[in-house]
Image (cartoon, rainbow, N blue to C red; front, top):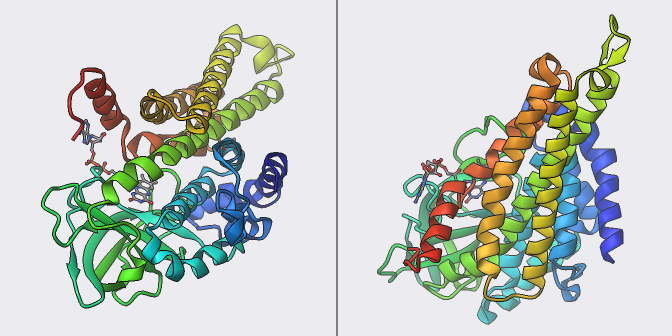
Length: 383
Ligand SMILES: Cc1cc2nc3c(=O)[nH]c(=O)nc-3n(C[C@H](O)[C@H](O)[C@H](O)COP(=O)(O)OP(=O)(O)OC[C@H]3O[C@@H](n4cnc5c(N)ncnc54)[C@H](O)[C@@H]3O)c2cc1C
């Protein structure tokens, strides 16, 4: 699969599967199994996976474009896809001793039949995902884990969960290890409903792990190496993917607002809203400027990920922080420009507005990213 083919496939799925159902799934808080099936059949579930496992072996540039295309139609599905891609890269980067046991799972992902996700955040440490409260306990040829994972996208729908827990002998709060748990693991259960303000159709429910046994060949990282894996393998692509979700939301807001300003009329003036009011045109222009600014920022991040250098981690942190703010600003302006028609839910703009608020809340949150950026500029330790 080439870059162009991948984006075309995403575009077809977005217009044929996602867009027609996004409003209804949002209303009902319904997870779209059809979307996951379509992504699997198209080969997009294996987008970044090596061709050795049936994946497409593509990189961050294509990933960003696919993400933004999906998010423009339905950000809930885009977030399901993002978490799957992150789960997949974590599995694919597993330590050599796990390679044999994990190969069949990677092949299933390559064949489009396996959905994965991340289960990092815990009730006890909230947005500080780098500091799990749960601890793995050595048990024969493996570990046992009990944990309260507070938000897990695709909970109850994923086939596997990449789970963090403190290493059995870990001394510090970040001495974690990553493990892979199949959805059928005894003791793993969805622990509550998902009824969010936004991203309502992505099943980001809590899951409970009750004394789950994990064999040693499903331990993805060495003991204590979970934290560097989160920072170096997961975080860069999470930042890129969530920035692309924000971009998709902004593009949808610009398109929806443009369409409304062209079609809604002041009949007594014989003009459309857009023809009649310069203030609405100016606000639409600001939305477009901010959207294209975010797009340029994403291109810059892609370039940094393709050719890593000293400033790459700074760009990773900056991009997610900025994208969350831009998405909120652009969709808020869309709400104001479209007025009562948006407020009364006639345009789908308010779904974009609600979905846009998730980005800044998802860890590392916009506030935490600013803390990290400020500390790193001042040469202070981040943790
Ligand atoms: C739709 C959705 C899907 C999610 N999916 C997943 C998933 O698949 N897997 C997963 O592991 N997690 C997931 N999460 C969880 C997410 O990543 C965060 O952990 C969670 O949203 C944080 O919740 P909280 O507000 O309770 O955090 P809190 O820590 O209580 O944060 C409260 C406020 O304090 C601020 N704050 C916290 N610490 C600092 C600090 N050091 N400096 C400055 N400000 C700070 C925060 O920015 C926030 O404004 C998801 C969340 C959402 C909303």
